[in-house]
Amino acid sequence: MSFCQTQSVFLLHQKKDVCRFVELTYLDMSNIEQIQLFGDRQIRTAWNDAEEKWYFSIIDIISALVETDRPRKYWSDLKRKLVAEGSELSEKIGQLKMKSSDGKMYATDVADQEQLFRLVQSIPSPKVEPIKVWIARVASERIDEIIDPEISIDRAIEMYRRKVYSEEWINQRLQGKKERKKLTDEWKRVGVKEKQYAVLTNAIYEVWSGMTAKEYKHLKGLKKENLRDNMTDTESALTTLAEVATREISQNEDPETIAHSINIARRGGGVAKVARDALEDQLGRSIISSENAKTLNASESPKEIEEQ
Image (spheres, rainbow, N blue to C red):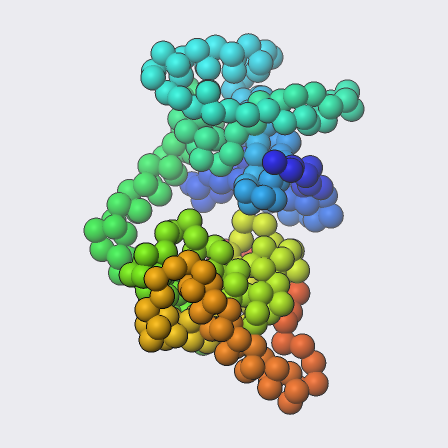
């Protein structure tokens, strides 16, 4: 697995009774005064491009959340506690070389986001309580959404509005979600395994956009963010067209092999490629954009978004 150290730090903060991890690049630290930090601690991180995951230094997290001058000893004791509880978390923890305060690289225990949330639940600290409350709230919300899926749609709409997406964009995005679900249902019907969806999706993207989904995300400067949430109206419309075409062709041909489904995905992407070429001929420019949600919705400041 290839990891890359980023020019970023993650800072634990609490605001409006919600705890979360916020990425603050060294190039944009202007809003640091507005954030209530837990000890103003920097959390060393690494990004795994293949897995599309952030990994966090466990020692740094403990130092930020626990009043101890021996975080390594605390972590050692906590691992034993986890084993006694029957947790397999400590067995799944990996190591990465990270730069220490002395400037040297040392092997450091790291956790991904899911492991980190499990880990903090075992730390008895007043600073952790808001995170535990937030995790419990999110879990409750997800259960509500399973019982009544319409709730998740309403929450998605509200989230997009808070991010200053236009009502037109939101409607188009929800339609795109609906068509994507129809496509994955079709893939499931013909026997495509869920782990193969990414292969078919890349086949669609490569034809109409000239890039895999990951390459497209790189163009837009994205990591964990959803690619579709960072598309322009035109990019989103062409993606939906490609997926609708793929579903229609699949229903018409009833493929029995993954190779046939890949061929259909490429042909579905080809339908959108024809539309893209025709539009670009009219415009005299490419419709593929490196812009993402941050630049597309930069008309309002983060403060204004938060206060809505």
